Amino acid sequence: MHLVLVVPWSMAATKSANSCSLRTALQSSIMVHVAREAVDIDRMPRGGPDASCLDRLLETDRLEYLDRDDVADDVKRSVIRTLEWTGEFFGNTDRFAKIVMDEVADVADPRILELGAGHGSLSRKLLEWHPTAELTVTDIDASSVAAMAASDLGEDPRATVRQMDAVAIDAPDRHFDLAVFVLSFHHLPPATAARVFAEGTRAADKLVILDLPRPPAPLHLVRLATMLPFAPFVPFLHDGVISSLRAYSPSALRALAEHADPTIEVQLRGGLLNPQIVVATRR
Image 1 (tube, rainbow, N blue to C red):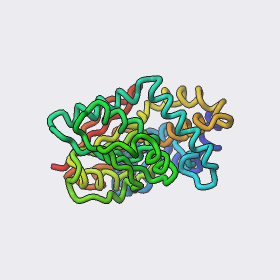
Image 2: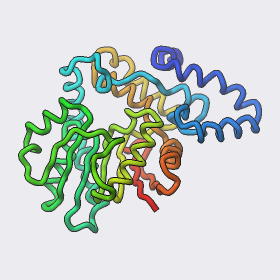
Image 3: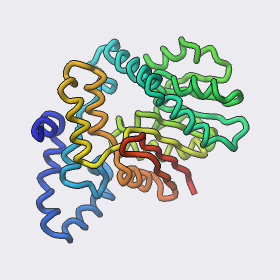
Image 4: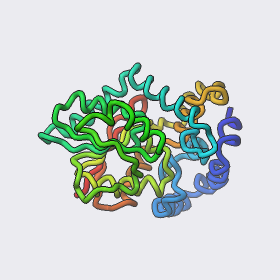
């Protein structure tokens, strides 16, 4: 199982493992290594600067089908449709909508920006639940944007569907009351993820990130073991394995926000068996 998880999925993880013996040999070496990683955000493990040796093995530089240019659109759409179905079936869409509603409870007519909207189910739910909210629904993928624009979202007078990159938000400072990024943050490498913190808290008063939790390494192994046998045959599970390996830990999320701007304050909730909730604001 160890070889299946490390060798096929990540050469970067193998390189990371080579330094583990040095870090466990001398406490001073650990301190130097952690301090260096906190500064070198590009090489920070997904488990954060203080990640264990095992945790450093459980990551990958491979891309999900959704992020690859050489994958057919119908495969990508199948993954998106499955994400939409699971969100409704397991109640995640309602759960995420409630989290967003709670964060704008004191705003009479909130302007909400959804980044990486994919299928747009969260924005639909927010429009349904809040009678005066205005939604800007975005994704970097042109086909996803076209599909949302051709749906009911494109006809809703309180919704604007646009193609937009989460690291280059086309809006003035503090234009939105809240920006939300759901189940997409793990797609980004560390330096790009840090830019989301910077841009999200620039364009909105509050940035909410809802993503996969990164469990402790032993539990992570169990989660991966349940998906790996089917990953080569089921696109959704293929992307699920990679998503799990690329998920950020709480310490990594704090390091990313600190790297983006030391004035960004981060509140973390959830995790382990529940979605990781990040609420970021500027002091």
